[in-house]
Amino acid sequence: MLPDKDGPNGGGGVQNGPGTEDPSVSLFREYLRLKTVHPEPDYDAAVRFLERIAEELALPMKKVEVCPGRVVAIITWVGSRPELKSVVLNSHTDVVPVYEEHWKHDPFAAVKDEHGNIYGRGSQDMKCVTIQYIEAIRRLKAAGKRFSRTIHLTFVPDEEVGGHKGMETFVKHPEFQKLNIGFALDEGLANPTNAYTVFYGERNPWWITVRCPGSPGHGSRFVENTAAEKLVSVFRMLNTNECFTLGDVTTVNMTMVKGGVAYNVIPAEMDVSFDLRIPPTVNLMRACSSTPPKQYQDFVKEHNRTPLNLLPFSALQKHMDQNFTSTEESDPWWHAFSSTCKAMNVTLQKEIFPAATDSRFIREEGLPAIGFSPMNLTPILLHDHNEYLNEQVFLRGIQVYERLVPALASVPPLSGEE
Ligand SMILES: [Zn+2]
Image (cartoon, rainbow, N blue to C red; front, side, top):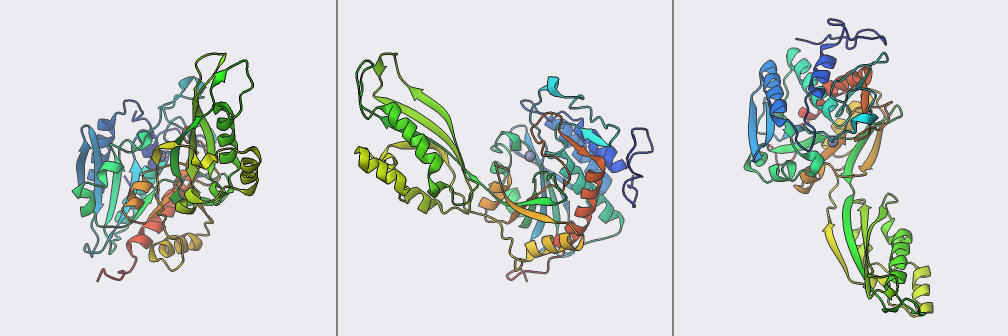
């Protein structure tokens, strides 16, 4: 079942009829119909699907059960120099839930409209990428190619629920070490312009709660320095504090407020919680200990208040991961990636990922990982209603991987590899 070498058949028009659709598109639509949706993803269906793919590709597939019912599948194409570090093409198999009533089409029917837009949960995040990897490998193998480095396709569960029973556990598993990874590709985001976005790092989520003790009293009196007053000041300070906006993509959101017992009692304490997302480029040690901005210091002095940075706070999670992947032209992996894109006239937009993906676990192991989903001219609809991807954009993405994979799997031996 080889796809048409010239890529997509014709432009536009409905291509739902049998025989008129590119087999890669049909496979993509088939995969979209598997209900690997939380809270009860049908992972068995995904594993069965991947077993069939491995058979078609004539490549071995290993199944690693990292947690009960949570299998990481690994399809391996051994290189001509298997001692060299490998290239990993990672994708997650799960998708986020849907609000079906907001969808134009059944989110698990993979309907293709007259413009070639394929609707389905996972069409952008990230079943498209899974099939693009597979189809690129299928075409390269059919063309008789072989590369020096081994290529592993890894398919992991549970990314959408934090990766604890997926990639986070897998990176600590002996089977992960055995992959001998040199470089990994993982998911990115769509880009509405002609460019493709690449992600070389992720922001650190900090969930912190600041305790604001204050002067208690009866609600009928004038009381100074109350807990509520401090709480408002904390919010103001975090939202304007320059030390947290160095990378200019830090976000601060107040998400919870707790405190108070009655209308007429001024509480002795209130708690306020924040969700902060800090780019890895921000020096966290400096951000934590830096002096607050001058206007704030003036306020503290003028009003004779406890500096808010001395208030007790607790952190539910405070990731201090400062790893990001090199995008210097001198880096052999990045050079292979970026020069291939350049040769294809593909414009890249380098960014820090706004949320968290499985790439962070790979980077925390000290391995380089780039987040890349080749979807240009496409609105960002991950986790949104009516998630779709146009079939032409999808097919173009396969061609991009057909060039990227050989480039990465042919990176000459690095120092220490020979
Ligand atoms: Zn995803």
